[in-house]
Image (cartoon, rainbow, N blue to C red; front, side, top):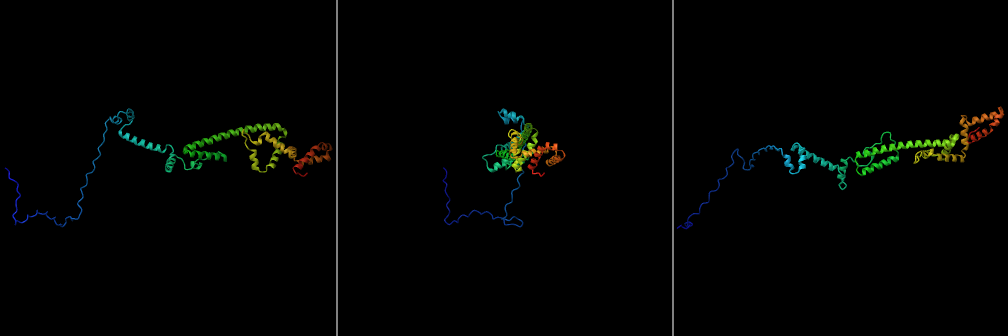
Length: 317
């Protein structure tokens, strides 16, 4: 039989038990020792990182990457090593980024996106010949009408964001086409004018030069503005040839010249065709009145014409 646990009983006048001993006080600071307020010493430096382990690939690395994809395996067979594969991935990413910049114009993009796209694709800020760096070919004489058409043409191309190379190609073709068209028109004009000259010579006969001179004199008097007169006479007809060469136009002006008293001028021009002036011829015939009466009488009609011609020109005889 075990004995029960009984707490010991203290005598009535027994002193209280003594407390457990306290921790010994810290050592007082010593000469040359650390100040209790100093920070604790730093940890020793960590060991340097281990050198990266060389990665090795077995000869079946292509099959591991391709898995069951035979097409991928076929493409990987063209690459010599995994390092070359990594380089190819980087290259293709760069190419993709470039294509995104040079792709379709970002219609819905910001102004910065549009400006960046134009700059990357060689599209200037303004659609002018100067901005696109386009110059007229040497020797090409461009009219005001052509200049206006070309300005509109380049502006239209700029409106669809055409790059400089495409605009230059289009403008070069424009110049070449216009030059070829102008050459063809010049040849057509020359052929048509030659044809009309022959028709006028046939209709007017020996009086052609004098009648044309009278008609030109009338035109100069009727249309005093030289610039306007030249523009009218040198205007090109739709079918080729210039207005001043058309037989019907020439005959109209000759008729107007005759109706307005230019017949005397025609006669005067005819009388001077021999090389002697009208006044010289008058004096020669008048001298025959005392030297050779018969020849004088035979020349009376011519003398009257000479008088009339001199008066029409305002000459004193």
